[in-house]
Length: 111
Image (cartoon, rainbow, N blue to C red; front, top):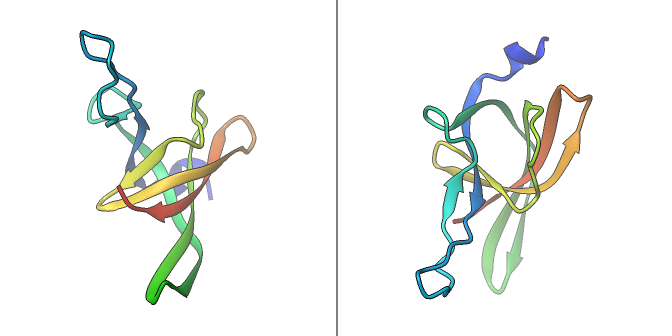
């Protein structure tokens, strides 16, 4: 299947902003969209690879490993996150496939 046919979801790629006020004091970190054009969304393939459930401190915890494929672009780093609908995916690793696409190894996280 061609890359264009697989990229059938719209996602937001975000990075934490590092801003300062007039006095040079750091402002609370906020997430801002990496792509400023249009609605800021990229075409992507979002696929859950694995999941596990475990008990920690008496509460059930879930972890899901998801791969997100996007067209190749520079500047993508593990400190970023991807939003797809109501889901937040923390980028754990960025794998350059072939110069045409990037594979983002993500864990489903919280804000």
